[in-house]
Image (cartoon, rainbow, N blue to C red; front, side, top):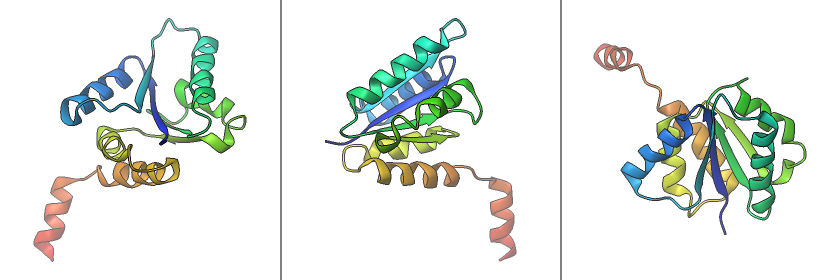
Length: 138
């Protein structure tokens, strides 16, 4: 059984990311999100994340957050030691990263998905004009 991927962001961005993935890839069973609306109690949010981690401790959870130092990231930073063996945390989630992870979620384990997230996230950031200038100069 493969790991779950949990997307955590400010506001409704996590849900929007998942809807975009579903639009492109269809339903991805092991992909889950948790919105962080302004009114949500942070302790309740933390408890909900911990429950997901407990429910998936055998396979692990790759958590993708939107912003380094934001509430979703900081909440996960507080609980990572308790779940060190079954949790990975990547910040800077973008749609390129999420699509790459979602397309491999059924075939890869948590460590492989983490590497896919890191690599695809970086590769998804491109300066088109800069790239064209490099190709023209070469």
